Length: 115
Length: 271
Image (cartoon, rainbow over all chains, first blue to last red; front, side, top):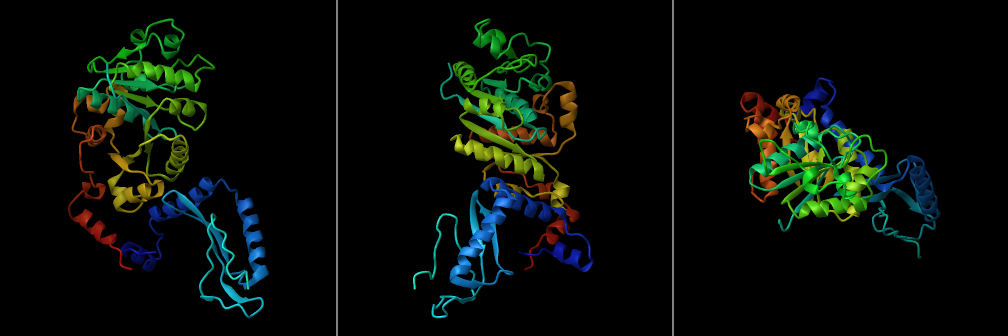
């Protein structure tokens, strides 16, 4: 996120940041949930199940992993950000092992499954 | 008989953001441009459009009596005192308990379309039956919101419903903008709101104490061509509806001078 001069001065003076950015962030989060009609519990359950499925194929860093809803231009996407430690068999070569594995709600890509 | 009547729903989801004030002022502004305009108060439980237009003592019939053929449409229409191109039609009165199906609303709007260039429907707050009735009769919509989290959230709900019901175009009016707070980044910016809601901005209306004064008198601001900030904004919105290209005012430029320049500098993105 870009920082403004004001943000930096606030930081230096240890003041609270201006409230508009807080409003924006809170809105974006709440709207992503409103638009998807998913409750927090359902989202949590889905997060768990996604992690379980992915964990069958690759070893993931559960602590670092995040499944969230992101919204842009009235389109909401399910974004799973799951850093992969290594694959189960050890033979599978991942394209970019460092990069998070992203999946959309529309397309469930089973990357590296078929080897 | 008017052809190509535009039927516009004015809605917001949340109450108190300025739907009725916008409806009244747009009605006056369009009428002043020579366009025959009907404003339909679809909120019969808590109707207020009559009060804002100063017509509260002149209502005899409502759309309900027209539909039940107890009176003719022109008997129910309340012509504005100064602006004869503008007429008010209340959908019903607060004493009625159950009423109005979407089809009733469609019928009454069809009748209005024969006489008017514009039909502005002042939508009730909420997303329940009152809103759905009003939406059923509309072709396009103006969503009114304030730069506040609750208003924007409710507007988003409404926009979702308008989209699924193929209402278009849907345009945004950002009401009660406080330039100073925006410049200090203590209020959601214009871009924040338009980005989040992903709607084209039809206009913004500056916060203006004169709005309350005009409500007290029952004379919409645009009626007396006052040089109030909000009146100018309403007029611009009416002109844009008619296709005129009027540039948006930049609220951060509103209080120009050193203070504004300094604030601009503070907003400079550094990294």
